[in-house]
Length: 532
Ligand SMILES: Cc1cc2nc3c(=O)[nH]c(=O)nc-3n(C[C@H](O)[C@H](O)[C@H](O)COP(=O)(O)OP(=O)(O)OC[C@H]3O[C@@H](n4cnc5c(N)ncnc54)[C@H](O)[C@@H]3O)c2cc1C
Image (cartoon, rainbow, N blue to C red; front, side):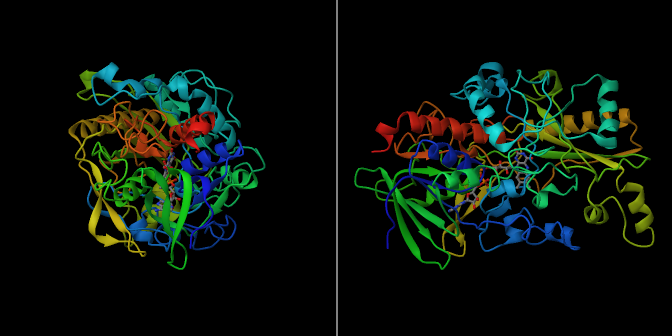
């Protein structure tokens, strides 16, 4: 049985879908969102208050959907990628799990072809997105410090920066000795009460969900506001495909409700916000006589150019207690010293570091650095609270052979084909990570680390999913235009990280949401033409 037709149907209630729906609702447009997951209750669904809180990182709160395998998850065939894709499926999407490090992409990131002759320039610029970055910051609530020389001047941050603590002071002394850039980076974490949400109590494990709502997951930022303005958010609704009318326009979707019954929802406009894997999956599964290779895919680029941010990890141990557990896990000091291209380093483009605090108790005990057996406790105490970790975040460049395709056999519990990721780490990214490991070691040593170790490629680090419905002005070489509108199907939009042309060398979500708000403004401004 079909539901009543809506103006705009958003698929996916994560970072981008929330921002888009909220923006449209402000103009009184009739919006519905279908989300395969459920609402989580921060107080009762997060493990923070239980004695077994850390165990949940290995089980129902594991960021890898294949290991977590909750009812709302779909499997991802990750047998052909050294980096495992991570995500969360619920109202709030992957922001339930995220570390809320909130840097914007930099102006140069949008112009890599012009500057460095690689990949493509974006059809939009940092300056065009700037008002939307600001708008998004206000709703998410950003802790930060004005004046970062690594960025153009930004509007005042909503709350003061995340405190450095003993650990941050120690590591920043290393940067200072080398004369390298560092800054207390933007975090979407309230450090004091803001917008009806509490300030952070410095308890630590942000990745397990924030029970006091200091961390800005979109279930506690955008969604309550959007729902109050009339957006219908339907949970446990898993979209199988987008349907089309006789003219080849999108006219709605087919989805499965919580009982597994297939339903139809009609809409004037369909907006995909399922992330860089979920969106190409559904587009590729939306096959018809008119679109035999999937919807919006005349270029053959749906699913192609898939980008992660390859991560290396460097961890330094100090011979003093740095109180490394105090404060949000993502301390979020950022270093942009090696961000821009310098070909003498042997690679094009660059990377940033995200500095994080010590590992939590169980993660320390299970970590590879300390042996099991009689020495375990002694070794544990040599490390616990005494380590600083750098995540080296490399700018991955788009490559056609890195892709999301439909698995021929694997399906989710509703029988929808699962995505398969085929990904190879490029030589350029490998060189970048190796350089980042060496420079990180220098900072650690300058700060006084007594031992420095590294992981050349973190496998469980596919946090950032980008590039699979590239944005551009030419329908032959891109899937959506500069307003996130499909070249082929004019009432179909994609507003998540799939539209990224390149990945930048920073966490993507601030930019993803700014783009979603920018696209929403386009729909609002042109509503007479688009919503017919
Ligand atoms: C552990 C972890 C840490 C992270 N840390 C950071 C960080 O510090 N900084 C940062 O910038 N980014 C971080 N990220 C990444 C960040 O969470 C994502 O970039 C962001 O959430 C992407 O937004 P999105 O809207 O594209 O997708 P998501 O937030 O993933 O939302 C997609 C939504 O679509 C729904 N969906 C998918 N398919 C369907 C379907 N067929 N039908 C209905 N609904 C569907 C999903 O259930 C999900 O809720 C992290 C991610 C993880 C997993």
